[in-house]
Length: 411
Image (cartoon, rainbow, N blue to C red; front, side, top):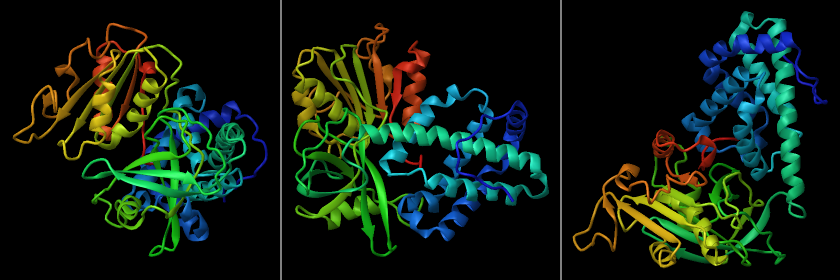
């Protein structure tokens, strides 16, 4: 049986590294089977952890698939972990947002390694079991140490904190803003524009709490936080699609209480910098972009900002007035795509381009492609972000200047 010991991990030996790398293809082949069994066994044995993991991602299989991909990536680059730096940073922030603690890692290690042994059967030799036990311990240390740094930076706010809904404002036919003020009235820490909070609600029909991440959608500095939530009507995972967003829209009103964790996330802009910004979003992906844009405007910054946004139609597009107002600044320009038009909508006033967003329709000037200092921030559905990233890379933008806000799984 594979075991896990919660002490400081010794570095992997060359032999262990070789075993882990050699088993990477096997893990790729059986990864989802292993991680699905892992989640089932762990959550059956430790039902309190259902409060941490997104139930919809479990039911739809997104969580096991994501973990399988992460384990395969780790096995592939176990001798060159620098290549995983961005993924580690993203996941560490997600873990901190969910209040994951060091004591969770031995639990995860035990059930993950037992699942590997169970699925591989006799193929899981003592040598393989020992190498993977050591490899998991090294990875756990990496996350525990990075998450400790994040928690220290949170200073006097740890864990979940009660917030009252101060105001609830419809931004479009499907996106509503919630202004959240701390119930304890203690001053809120500033966050970096683009970052998110986790929000959790108790779900009576499931008997558990469920967390979700939402971008903060305004400039920092006020006595409340604003999130802007799209009401998800449903999706392919039919067990609990859009569960939290529907509860917030339908059941939660001004005066009601929700719980939040400290703002965090590796997708952010430092307003004091002067490099040009291109903000590219679709649908509810506009939320972190509005925070960034409002922050630049509020700071009186003269840095050039180009915001490109696509929506299905004007009725579902949020923050139209705020975007129009920002575009009056000489250093800000906005480009709007609408997939479907209403008869009275005027090009150049209500929208710039009809149809699905394509950066090739805009031209290089609005994308600042001739300025090698430009940073690009992209938020929207995963296929959309992949398309935008490919276009930018194909047009000479270095990968390290392209920042994607990847929600969904990661815990």
